[in-house]
Image (cartoon, rainbow, N blue to C red; front, side, top):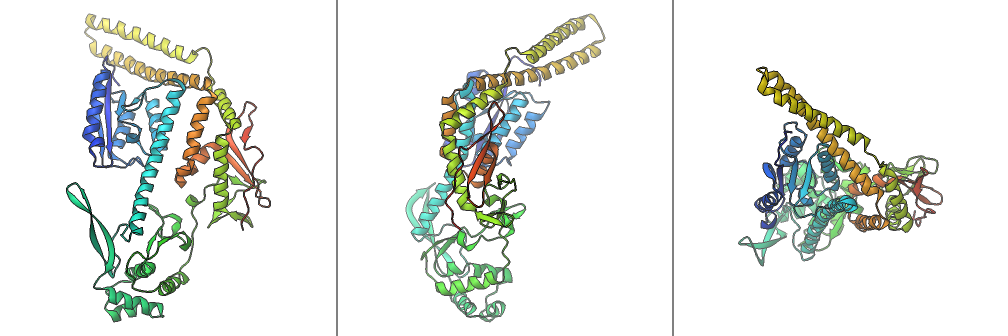
Length: 504
């Protein structure tokens, strides 16, 4: 990166919704004002319009990352509106900021105060965690709105199944100049044929011959989907039927979740068949289906849950298994989370974490490495100045310019190294001076938001703070060993352990 007396910066703007207060133009205007106030020169801009912040698969964000790593980069500061523009996932945010620090790039948020010391370390982490929780809560609010629509007899979304059609009903509200409507299922012209098919199928009829006889032009896949919607044809709305899908296929290797995980809202629209007929059809489907419902994502403690002998507990359906031993997974998970939440707020844990943070600072009174780097930079400055003076005294300018550029590149590299060293010392100094009050506030925030995190986020968080959890099959006694070491090198353990109430 070339040196210049004017600090050059780049802007990053992201919007996932078409709202004026967070539009790209609104963000750009505020960041331009911030750059002007700080005397920065804007030389680059990266934009993601209508892109979610839950992952890093965004064109503008990826271009920004590539530019940060480029040796040709002409700016040293990134300006963003707030932490939520960077990411709605705290791990993406932390990784990005780590990459910036490594490359000597400063990240400034317009709506976040610039703080030093402990507050400067804790506040960004808390804000990023809150961004992820906000994303989760926004999703939950959306689901709650869908649930309320269904309770009122309206459709939660999606296409109407075969035999029904959507009837749109104005709510009286206006959005963007258009009337807001809600939809409900009503029988379509195909309803009589679908009703007859399902009733005769429940009575034992063969699917393909029935479809041909009734004139339903459906292939095997469509017929299979129709029958899996049996409860919908009984007049109910069913949620949470399908597993999440990724590039590798459905989670757990199967398309549909176990029946006990389905959420059913009764009597939301006109039924074509009875409940008994619907259950008979579903039973036929399940009788010919191989169930293989195993998924690591559903089991919170795999990899850290061990027996007293050190044998790993593995997730299996709704249980943890170790050899011939098995325990109820949901029961253990909930009790472990509850206990960790209490531990995080306990005075003993706060004290242990504070001591561990201070011990990890490893800050010496002298700055030997930093002084060596500064000394080398000073020597390079002298060489560059001397060669610059010689330029006017010789015709061999090409050789001198090449040497000056070589020294300048080396100097820039050392300046970046010095920036990183100073950042490490600054953080180490803050950790050495950290107070129990600061740690207590941070842990309370983590503990309060623990129940709102999704499964994957919880798994990541637990693996970040927990070394192992021992579970005795006979007594169900648990002991949590945290990744926090005291000065003696021993891992902090949850005092006395605990015993979740047993249910077979």
